[in-house]
Amino acid sequence: MNNKIKYGCGDITMANCVSTEAVPNSQSTILEVDCPSQYEVNEDIYSQLEDIWTENDLEALGNLCLSYTLIGGKKVVKNVLLKFEEKICELQERILELETTAICSTNITDCPFDFGTLTDACDNQPQTLAETIQLILDTLNTP
Image (tube, rainbow, N blue to C red; front, side, top):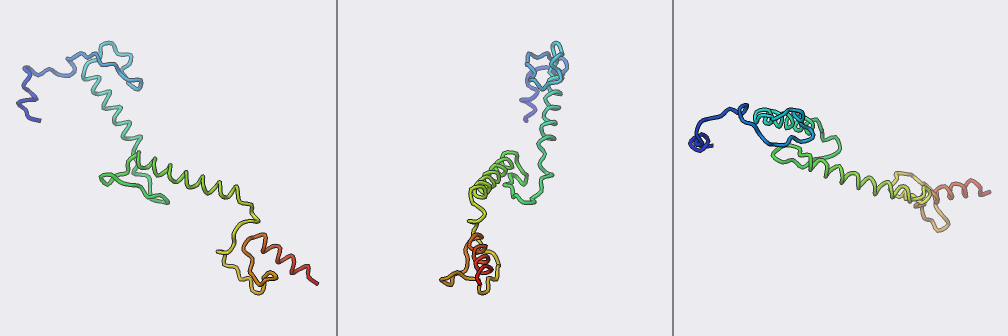
């Protein structure tokens, strides 16, 4: 700031000599102070800002299983919450899928099973857990 502008208003008055009509917020430590000075208001605001910065410090968040979008090389609360929301939605979809798929209908074609000669009457290997169990039972129960 240009000192000509900064100090161009006459004599300098210290903040503790300036009364203010500012209404402190609900988190203020000067709610009960009658006629707080500008100095007290400033100190209270700086203290609250420090608390906010401390409470919102995201440096401890590692990239264990989530990657965060950085702004200026830092994690930002908004982006962290958006990533949490994305992951929660993915998990909800997966949970719904698991809850609505009967275990016997579970597709097992990607499982590394060696079915050997275990096939149905048309020479097809089983595709679901139910088909596999049924083929095993049929094989065991065939005389």
